[in-house]
Amino acid sequence: MSPAQAFGVAVRVVGLVVCAASLLYFISAVIVVLNPGYRANLSPPWHYALSGIVSLTIGWFLLRRADRVVAFAYPEHKRQHSDA
Image 1 (cartoon, rainbow, N blue to C red):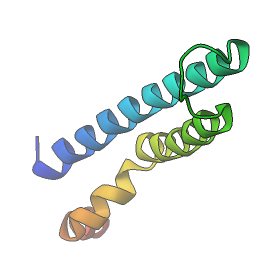
Image 2: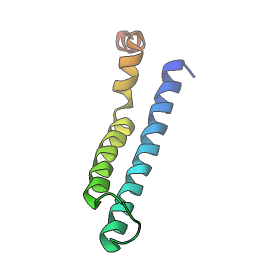
Image 3: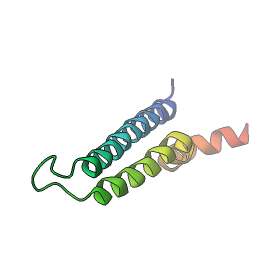
Image 4: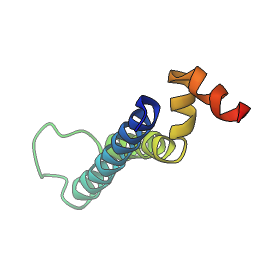
């Protein structure tokens, strides 16, 4: 496995972890909406929902477009495959 391929796998794993974190943000937003007295000094539900949307967008991008991130990190690797 080349370094570019290993980096692509790592980018996709990070994307999967970020998508899982977004799910936890959405669950936290639902908990805060259903039980406002859950904990003192808790952020409003829209903070959790917005964080979930942002992290889902970033995670989805990392999962679906890892090739763009790899091409940015390894520009010569992209040129080698386009010439072949």
